[in-house]
Length: 187
Image (cartoon, rainbow, N blue to C red):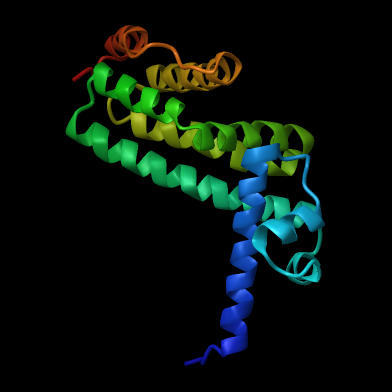
């Protein structure tokens, strides 16, 4: 068994704080507005720490986006649990409406779109939410309807960013009811 030294624990904690700070800055300022100096200040670490732990700003950005994708995966798990209890169109609309109310989450989601446009190697992170949502929804409707709902959800995200408010829950409930009904597994 390997003993982790105090130095290794401190180094791992510092690396994590740099990743989290980078993720926070991506949400606050966008994915293309990062500097080592700004990240170090946000993480409250010496400037050299960002280059000590990461080979490049792109490497750090990719790890911060992975951190954000993991957070979105947690949200997908919560949605999966909630829909297992109640997979009605109204419940799905409520969950999406709540998601779209969370500025941090939607800005994280937008960061994936921007990052994958600039760097195609990040596309798997950008598609994780969509693919995960389709997988969750496919338990309650057919795959085509699940994909249509996921596409609508992406559009609703853009709408929310541009208008500073989501579509109404009632409107989303009607749309999801029609899509899930056509999918043949409506609860």
